[in-house]
Amino acid sequence: MSTYTVDVYAFFVNGAFPNINIHRIKQDITNANNVWKGCVKFVIKGLYFSKNKIVNAASIPADKVFRNRQIESLIESVRNATGNKVGIYVLYLSGDYLAEGRGKRVIGVGGTELVHFKKSMDYELFGHVLLTDKADGRYTLAHEFGHVLFNRYDITQHRFIHDDPSGPYFNSQIGKTDFAHSNNRKNLMFPISPSVNPMVTSQQCQLAKSSKIVRIQNHNIDEDYDLRKIN
Image 1 (cartoon, rainbow, N blue to C red):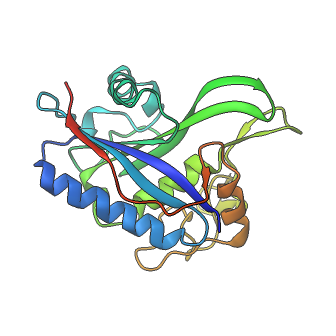
Image 2 (cartoon, helix red, strand yellow):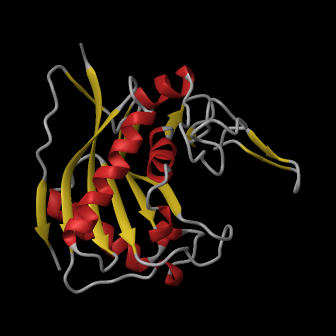
């Protein structure tokens, strides 16, 4: 039986001791795998620590976060350490919230970066996620994984989209429609994901499986990851 897997590489610049961070990423991955069970399995492939860097989330505006020069540099350093492997790169920051930008009290952001594009079905992406200390113990990483895996090229619109098939979410307070989130409060992709037993639909599952970041494995996946310090 085939297993749909995603390689995950985590980089910690939050000042916590390595054993604390190892526990945290394993908890986050366990939560994600419990939610996405039967769809996609997330596998830790690399854990990277810096002795010299601590990045406070409050110094990073929540809008255009992946166009921030400091964040770009950090992600590039981890990508270089992995040999630019396909997967999702998770960056753990210190502090509770990102600086205000696209919203207040933002504790996680996820998206993709295009590596190359030849045609509609021939392109390469990698995912990236930022998490603050306030995301600890929640399903935030599982939620951000959804944003990464839903990103795909739409041949009818001739552009990349990340619409959630269980959406859109409609914010009645401001009259705004959000195609990237679910309108179901019990769904993982609700704007504020549930704190207990979030669900994903079969449509979300199938879309996640089709992501360019997902690999199809025909054997058991064992935990075997790279653990090291980098500058």
